[in-house]
Amino acid sequence: MVSLEHIEEAGHVIAPEFRDTPLFQDDELSAALGCPMLVKIETVNPLRSFKGRGADYYMSSLPPGHRVVCASAGNFGMALAWAGRRRGVPVTVFCARDANTVKVARIRRLGARVVLAGEDFDEAKSLARTHAERERLTFVEDGDEPRIAEGAGTIAVELMPAAPDLLLVPVGNGALINGIGTWTKAHAPHTRVVGVCAAGAPAMALSWKAGAVVATSRPRTAADGVAVRLPVPAAVRTMSEVVDDMLCVDEESIARAADLAREHLGLTLEPAGALALAASLQHPVHADRPVAVLTGANP
Image (cartoon, rainbow, N blue to C red; front, top):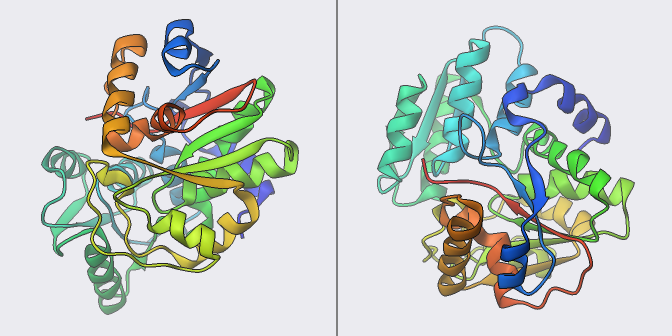
């Protein structure tokens, strides 16, 4: 269960580099989108993504002596490596053999051991879990570990003073939207929480609609940060309680959204980081104060 008490605690525990990120409306971007869009920018930090929030909160809870293993497409691994270095926790990250080479190199520079294995993220995750069990290490799964979602939920705490009526949130393994959704539904129940998946990686959207895990074939999208084919059951269960709708966006909309962010915000978003803007391009936005959460930039 994602805890409201822990989300509040996380706001005081996680590194200040990741807290109180910019939230504003750009008039020209809003005109291009056709709606008065507020943007929550989670890229102005040492990792250029929101992942540091959950990773640092999780690491803060570990007793001394733990060694952590995870799987990552890039950003989660960088975040755990950064937080592990900060808090003295050794980290091993399993990445698929075709993972983003720039992110893999950054994970190594941050001090983590990297193992390249598996044809895609989900296969790398299975191998990471087996390795952790064999070596008696601590396996942490993005989407399953509540403290990862609780750290991400601090974004919602920062959004509430703006009184948004719609939140557009990219969805990969579900930690981000579950943290945001849990806090939002407790403090602003009429605010709609809408997840956004890449159409080429629809497993989380299909699972939310079915109310159960729906696995898909290998994802086909440039948005590698949300390229999930086998959803985490715990994440799907929580989403059924705190998410109002799920949207899918095509590759053209993702690319156009990234172009608009670069043109109007001066941000070089990675494809997954542009999903919320892509949703407002491809789907009508019926809201007076919508917020797009921009989750990651190219390293």
